[in-house]
Length: 171
Ligand SMILES: C[S@@+](CC[C@H](N)C(=O)[O-])C[C@H]1O[C@@H](n2cnc3c(N)ncnc32)[C@H](O)[C@@H]1O
Image (cartoon, rainbow, N blue to C red; front, top):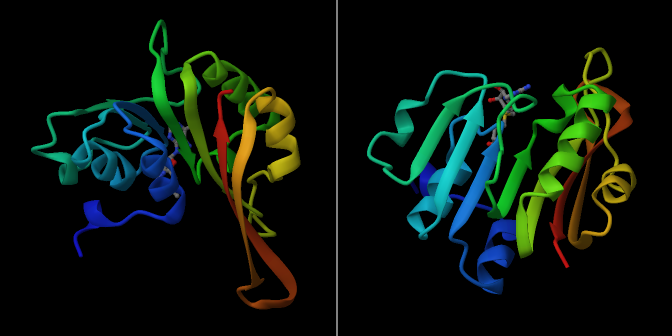
């Protein structure tokens, strides 16, 4: 299966709820999710610190910007979905809170915010954003789907690594 054909249950839930015509992929990486949604009719804005990935050559509906998510200008843009997958924990609590508050104003009614977050490695300088913290900041958005995965931490049998897939909806 090609990379752009892979997605997870959260994205499938989103697409089952209705069509997605616009999306913003913050910390897009190789743009796997942007490609998946673009192939299903969405116009995507993808943002990452890295250079534009070659994998999106030929995707005319993916508009890639090399930028820090904290300074990306949202101006009057509105989206059906904003993705923050595996990127929140790179930001300080203040920056993460500011970004989450900012994106709330750029989601269409009934639109989605999809967040993937996890416990960071012990020795890393990354941050932990538990679902409860995110839910509070994103209020009044409603948490409509939550998947929690617990696995033993690599090389640390006494520590559990948590990851969460969280889907919020603008009521
Ligand atoms: C683990 S990857 C996740 C990629 C993609 N979201 C996914 O789920 O497949 C994290 C990405 O976040 C990007 N990133 C980290 N901090 C960032 C920032 N402040 N602004 C923009 N991108 C950032 C990294 O460059 C990296 O591509």
